[in-house]
Length: 54
Image 1 (cartoon, rainbow, N blue to C red):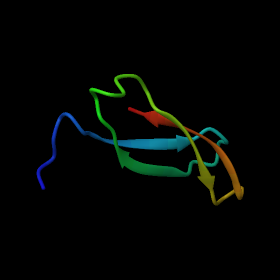
Image 2 (tube, helix red, strand yellow):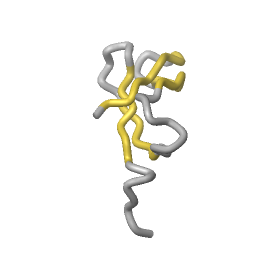
Image 3 (cartoon, rainbow, N blue to C red):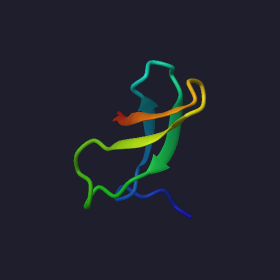
Image 4 (tube, one colour):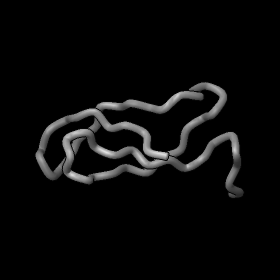
């Protein structure tokens, strides 16, 4: 599977300040802006907002 410019790999970093990250891909066509997703942060054991890091 080749890496593609239309679906780049991005890092989602926790806004809780724990430094925890998720790695995922996103579609540049559907989401041209930075992603913001609520996901689980196991360090503080809560769901928090994760923002895309460039």
